[in-house]
Image (cartoon, rainbow, N blue to C red; front, side):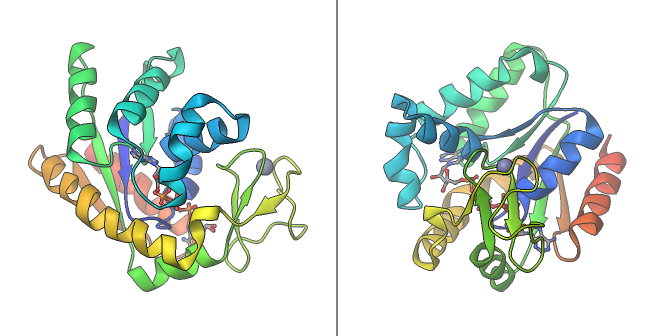
Length: 217
Ligand code: AP5
Ligand code: ZN
């Protein structure tokens, strides 16, 4: 399946994507993770993205679209993918449509994770992220690592993301409402959107998502 995951910062996109990608045998492609990997490797792409991310702003489309398309060009994404954090505005949504149309394929579903803002703030405040791989995420209360401060998956050090300060989270939410939410209507008009509540235990949300996607397939 070719799936786009949308939802506000801290909704649990990355958490759910890891489980869903495994269950559906498709790669999890997160533009946020790709940017963070570039930043930690000190690439020029990472340098271009860093200031925008730090400020909670979107990285410019020309940088983001090129990076996303390069990743989609990899052979593992040929049969399907779960896109997390891309597209994030109308221009990116249209670029993705054009990219897929050129290859004679299209999206199967847009999974919209709904969660109240008060919950988002709690989830982000307690999130801890692995320095080795930002797709390894934990929560001090809801999903604690076995050893405090140490990643269960790879033993890396856990830290609080620089853009997870309350001030920057508020900025990211503002950008989400202004830039990203409108693309949900764009995809609704194409009949692609399935909305689920992202409240409840991680495994419950995964099951809800699998049921919703099965109904769409
Ligand atoms: P990105 O990394 O995509 O961040 P985001 O969309 O703000 O999403 P988050 O990673 O904050 O949250 P999430 O929904 O994945 O939640 P998670 O699973 O971690 O983007 C960062 C920045 O990169 C952007 O601001 C922008 O600058 C740039 N960028 C990226 N893509 C771009 C694009 N396309 N265009 C331009 N710029 C772009 O969960 C959060 C916490 O909650 C965790 O601690 C988790 O353990 C916990 N949790 C999860 N589920 C549950 C549950 N059910 N119950 C309790 N706790 C839970
Ligand atoms: Zn790790």
